[in-house]
Image 1 (cartoon, rainbow, N blue to C red):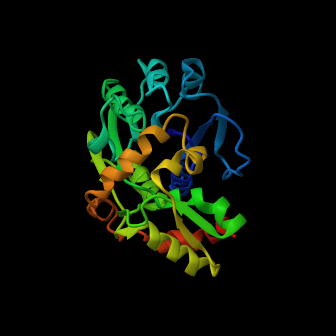
Image 2 (cartoon, rainbow, N blue to C red; image 1 turned 135 degrees about the vertical axis):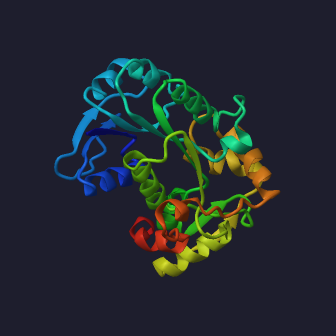
Image 3 (cartoon, rainbow, N blue to C red; image 1 turned 90 degrees about the horizontal axis):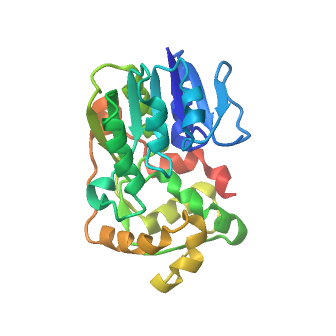
Length: 278
């Protein structure tokens, strides 16, 4: 069985590759460009854009199952390429936010909602993974921590049960390989609630560095945060963050129910990634 993993340059999809290799599966990765990563022996690397049906069709040749990240076209290119092929299963990386901000007028989450609609209409067995906030989002602070020893962010009290991408990858591997996940939508969170300020404190303790926190005003967000966000997202980013201030997302047991294990904490994630902040 050949499994295609898209977006494998990211931490979650990269973890999916590692998990599938450990399970002795044949893995092909589709990348838009060379990331410089060294891949495990036996992993086939092909290049192409998910928005290009010709490139995707070529990447899908001989593939039976797919771990799919949605491109900016909402999955239209993938759907055009995959239609009529004998695929067995697609595991789609969506977003928990489609449950709360899933309207098509929200560019932050439009592609995920469209992706679910597109994959659901393919006539192929599917599983949707809807992670909440990821622990790896803290990497957006790595540059300012290394250069200045500072984290600049909105709303230090903003709290969420951050999910370790390694846990997300583990669930994806189970969904790709094990029976019983067909037609299921899994909303995933980490095992504990942690605020932005508490994340910074954890990074300070784990790196052994002095890291100060600077709260920015809403009007500063485009200049300070805009460069780290995809084009056009800053306009809705602040309203979404303010919406999350009104209610703290719940810790969900999904990861434990699927794997039988306790999810990794933000501190565990930070401990494995201290070099990114030094």
